[in-house]
Every structure is written in structure tokens, then in C-alpha cells.
Length: 426
Image (tube, rainbow, N blue to C red; front, side, top):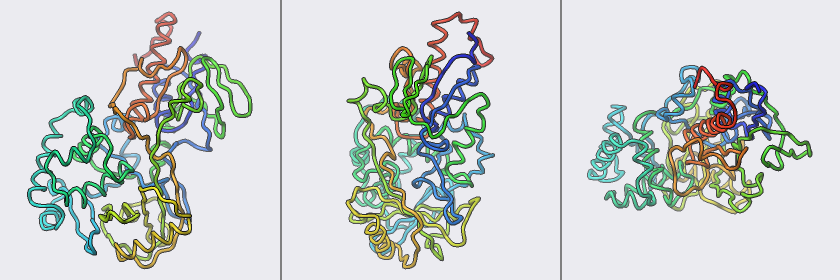
């Protein structure tokens, strides 16, 4: 049987599914992707509203991600760099801190800011040095604690934790108590230290679009929902049945596979609201943090502080809410406007669009960095991908997709004549 004749289905056209397809293509196979929505991207999408680029939730790419460096063409994405720092709004004041070793202009604002003590700043330098020496494998093999306990054990002051670490990493982890694994903290902190936070000029969806454009032998079925997956068979919501040699599930699998019904992934949610404003309160490409435990807003960002392909007529402001709430959409918009005026001095903005994202990040325990291809195998013909298999990151999504595809290839090699599956990529 020729490689291209194998029916290898991938459920989900997010980043993990696209990487799985690319690896299969590299080995001579012609995969088929089934996607419930009208386009690729999964949770990584961008809409154009009134000429503005609105990502589905405020998202960034970290250029130091090893898998991203391997699979993405950074130059073609036209990546726009954030400054390695942040502007913090606290007690009616606005202060900027950052990494002066990478951006000299941040030296004096950081040294003379009232955020943390001089001892805190020395501890940050020590943490930076320590993580540069630690491999990613070492990070994910060490015992886990919460991020909060980790920071306390390192001796950071309560002020430094509450004014910087909590608001900054709450926006990344999508939870405000810093209960996320210390492994994830070290991983993300190391990635920030070794590269830059960036956005493609055309918005975050440029990433899956680029991955999709590289697929030459993959068939896509959009607007197609899967109801059930069994070994060798995929049942669609319209009752059509697809016969499959192998299936890679690159989306939430618990509602599709009967023996996973009791293992549904827990998810973290968030709200992102976009506003049109006449001016920026932060002129440079810095994320603004609201360091007030009573504030609903976690962070703000002016998107036109970076170059964008589509820019609208005025300034674009995104506001991210991490904590859960029971506010209606109208009440939330009004509450956000009140807080923008109170904390940031933003007294005039026009609401554009709200994204409520119930499944923004998987809430995982026992985080891993990578996995063996054989570990992605759920049943004889079914493999699992997606960042839920490792940790909630673009890097994890890519590595899990790669591992699942290699798992399928290993399974095929063990079941047929190896000479039939030789590849220039083997």
C-alpha cells in the first residue's frame, strides 16, 4: 500500500494539528484534516473589525520557543517586538520596569521605580542567571510547587510579588493566585529571557496561516464536526462515517472518545475587550499591568505601538480580564471603562468587540516539556495531540503534534514492510 493511500485523519486544524500534518507530509503521507470552524488556527485567530486586527484574546509568541524556531519562518511573519518590560499602574502612579541588559533605555526607569526593593532587583538578576544555565529538560523534571510558593521561597518581597509577578504572570497563566506549576513559571521566564515577545504584523492568526500554506499534500474539510471517534472509524455530526487507518485527535478528545468521557480537561477562561481610543497612554510597545488586587482588569495593550497590516483610523486598545465574574456583557463594558479611567486615566474609548474565551488555556498538573511518540498512542489506531498533552503553550502544541505524527509513523513501520515506508526524512 502506497503512503498516500493511507487514510490518516487529523481532527482539529489548530497549531498542533497543522504540525502533525506537516510531519506526515514530510514522510510522504497525505493526511486529511477535519475542522469544525471555517478556517485554520484553533484558539489562534484574528478578525478584522472596522479595519482593526483583533486577535481572539491578547496573545503573543515567544521567539525563544525551540519548536517555533524549527517550524516557523520568522522573517516572513514580519514579527513586531515588544520591549522587554512593562508599565505598571498602581496607587494612581505609572511606572515602567524592564530588562536593562537587553534594552538600555529601561535601565534608569527600572532602577528608580518604586516596584520592589533593590534586593528584589538583585534576586531577579540571580534568577535570570540561574535559568540561563538550566535546560528545559531539567526544568520539567524538577519537583513542582506553585509559582507563588516558588517566588516566596526565593525571597521576593510581598510588594514585588503583588505589584509585578502577580499581574504579569496572571495574564500569562490566566489565573490570579499564581497556583500554576513552578515548572511553567521557569519555562516561560526562561523563554522571555532568551528571546522576545512578538506579534506578527498581520496578527496572531498569521502563524497558523503560514503553517497551513506549507501543506501541499493535505486535504482540509472545514465546517465539519466530529461526533465520535472509534478505532478505524470517525462519525461526523451529520451521521457520515469515515473509515480511517489512523486518527490524530488534535483537539479536546474527551467528548469524542467514549473511554475518555470521565477525563475531560479543565480549562481556564478569560475575556478580552477591544476599544477604539483617540490617543495612547503608553506610547511604546509595552504591556500595561493593573497592580490592584480589587481590579477586574489584568492588563492593557495599545496594538498600534507595534506595526500592523490593518490599523483602522484611531488607536486600538485591548483589555484582558482573567478573574471570573458574573457580569453581563453590558455591565462588564461599563465596569472596564470605569477601571480604565480610575487606574490608567483613560476617560474616552469606544467599545469595539468582546471575546469571551471559555477554553483559553488548559488547566494542567504534572506538566511535561515533551513526550515520546509512543506516549501519544491512546488505542491501536488513535493518537492524541494538542497542548493539553504537555503544557499550555504554542511550543507544547507544536511538540505534541510532532510526537503524535511520529507515533503514527512508528505504528505503520511496525505493521508493514519497513522498505515501503522509507523516506528522505527518516
